[in-house]
Structure formats: C-alpha cells, structure tokens
Length: 286
Image 1 (cartoon, helix red, strand yellow):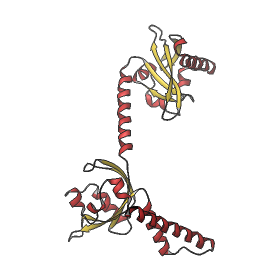
Image 2 (cartoon, helix red, strand yellow):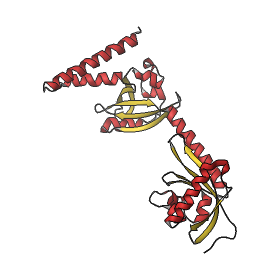
Image 3 (cartoon, one colour):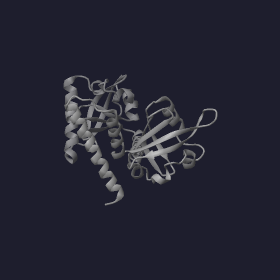
Image 4 (cartoon, helix red, strand yellow):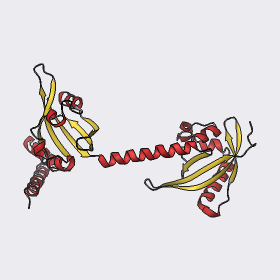
C-alpha cells in the first residue's frame, strides 16, 4: 500500500470517528465541541475530490498587497491541477506566474473583505480551465476550492460554435424556418420567418407570446393545420410534398407551402416539428 493511500485511509477513518462522536453527542443533547468541529472541517477538506489550496497575502511597506505565498494544499490538489504540491507549496505567486499574477485582484478582495467569489479561470501555463471558489479563513489569507472545468468549457465552446454555424446557415436560406416542440413552444425562428411574418424572433420565441395562435387564428383551423403538420412530419417518405396553408401575418395574410419533418433533441429528450415554408407567389392579401 502506498504512503498516500494509507494516509487517505487513516484520514477517512478519522473522519468516520468524528462523525460517529458528533452523532453520539447530539443524541445525548450535548454540544459538538469547537475542537471537534475544526477537526471535522479539516477532515472534510482533506478528503474531498475538489482541490483546495490555502494562501497568505504578502504586503509591501506601504501596506499594499503585492504577492501571496501558498501555505498548504489538500491531497486532491495534484490530481485536479496537474501540479505537484512540492512545486507549489511555499512558493510566491510571482515565482509561479510572473510579475503579473492572474486574478490577484480577486484574491486580495476575498482576503481583505471576507467575500466569497465564484469564477471560471484559465491558466495557459498548464492549459486548464477551473471552476473556482475563493473564500477567506481569516483576514489577509484566502483559500481556493476548485475543480477541473476544461472538458465542460471546451464542450460549451464547441456547442456555441455549432450553434453560430447553424444559425448563420439558416439565416441565409430563403424559406421560412420554424421549430416548435410537442408543447407548441417555438424554439427556433429564422430571419426569413421574421421578414415574411412581420414577427421578430424575440416575439416568436417568447413563452408569453403564442405566435402559433397569431399565425393560425381560430382554434379549429389551428388544430387542423398543426395536426396535418404533425402527420406530415411522422409520415416521412409517404407524406405529401407540401402543405399549403393560409397564414395570418402582420399586414394581411400569406399562403405558405410547408414541408414538415420530425425534430428530436438527443441531449434534452425533447421532440417537435421542423416546418420549412415558402411563400406561394401572388397570394398575399392586405
């Protein structure tokens, strides 16, 4: 058994003993001692999967915070950060990151005001993003509790780029494109839809603005249109080529020929209808 594994096992046993003692004292109606509370907090910090590092600010002769020194880290620090504790503990921030220490203003604010601050950080030296909490155990000191957020941040960026690419393409097409889910909430509305309908995307996508009721006024007519769209979407190859409907737009009506298909979101488990419409020439009325 490695020294690290044995140390972790001993810490867990100590944590279990503290919790057992706390439960016994609570059952007897006794207060949990401050010493035991401190031991419990230390055991939790040193056995959690999140990385923890504790730092002390360094001040110049004028009383201005100019640097910090790392005092201690928990066992998870190396796994989360990829940095060996021996290369971090006892080192100044300027030695680790250069003269301009990243996020130093946040660390000073936390250490001197006691504010808890959550933020995402990126350290190019190690090529990682972190989801970080800064808090202060006492004036002039700050602690960081953080997890590796690299994969989630990169996934968010990739998703954002895909969305930008998709929106760029759909805004270039010349047909009315809208997507609504099974509850008839509009979730996509392209620029051609804005131009042909007169309804901007903010209106169409607002839950408080029932745009389908505006487009297909009259409940019986609306239900008929949406049911035919649903059948077309689920019929696939057997569906008719187009579904022509009268659509109430701002300033009059248009005849729109729709092609519908099924939409499914694998990530969120949602489904609905993708409706692509083209205006039938010469069929707009004021």
